[in-house]
Image (cartoon, rainbow, N blue to C red; front, side):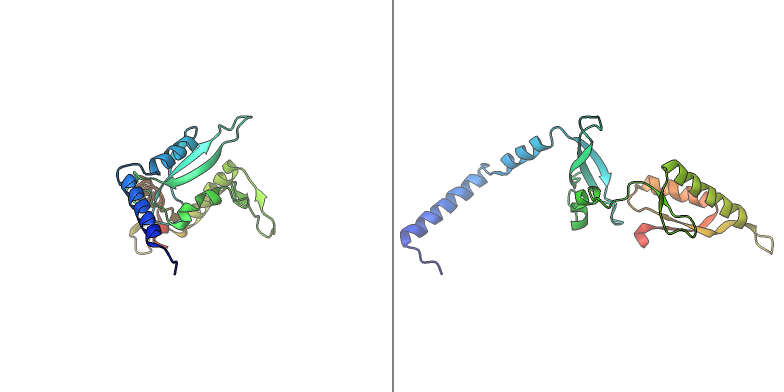
Length: 196
């Protein structure tokens, strides 16, 4: 236990009381710290987005610096919770708080790859090539396996050999359009990441 004289105890008590009184009157360091943060982010571009990790769909604010010109490569320098988002109201879980590390990870894949059947190596392909290949394979499978009628003559218009897993981080409107698109193909195996 620390031994204090009565005089030392009164000095510590008086300085604690003075400090807390000043903070209560509005002389706290929070505005000063907010000014430092505001200065740090003053030249950045703010972008609203949704956290990609889980099915909660928390809102995030990403701050980017640079414009991809020769002089300044665009980069995200800060991520925080969106205080105006109705889901998380500015808070983030540990995974969401570490998004900046996710974005700047050297092992993050930023382009599509394809591994041919029987091959042991992945080959980088363009986005157009990847999307065209997915569309072609889906069309071939649907054309080969679409069931228009059951053996007893009932119209069913269903496609049972492919499935679709939708992302849960999208908005209600994106989910609605995804659902309508997938169901219009006749696909029955449709689920959302929120249930997985």
